[in-house]
Image 1 (cartoon, rainbow, N blue to C red):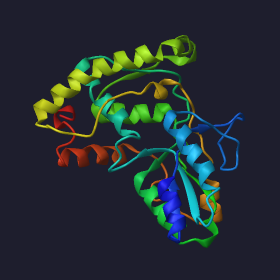
Image 2: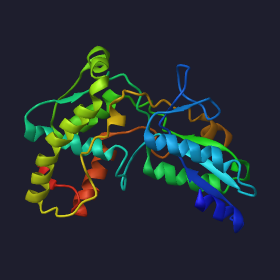
Image 3: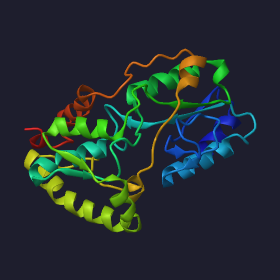
Length: 259
């Protein structure tokens, strides 16, 4: 909020708030920008509060964007932790076990399209005071992500389904803690073996991400009202491999996990 107030005070021509698309609504189907929404994670909760308060700041020419799950070169907190986790399971010699169903919506957006959309909206006077969902047209689901990560690292995966996952709801703290303990040692060993001595990447799981929430967003406002065209309409193996290869080049991802 301090940045937004400063932008208003000094007459910044446009202030873009990158919020969160980790929201849900009471109705079924993709969420639109003007729906009454409920934040799904701690970060989304505070991002949504910022959205509401921004609208009360006098003389602030703002635009709000809500990205879906982010992936692409430079991403650290979107799909990259999922990539890091998947990379460990060939060495662990077991399938990646994933809560909930493969059909759960996990809509995505490429980093490059986020940057392009922000620049596109900055140049549009009609975007002042507006909110836009940033989401690709691939209707990404959990099984699509799992299949791509599995093919990248030569591992198998299985979904535990709604019944078993629902029974685990009261133990998500314990499940997250045990998973993080399980992943931390092989990750550290792989980093050491590859000479990765310092990296911002991690296979850490937060309990918020075990809830089986759906990220299903309607991006038609950006596409139709402002004529924006996606460069990466759907997630692919090649695009996720670019992420891994880029981090390997910077010696931030253990290359032995791809061997």
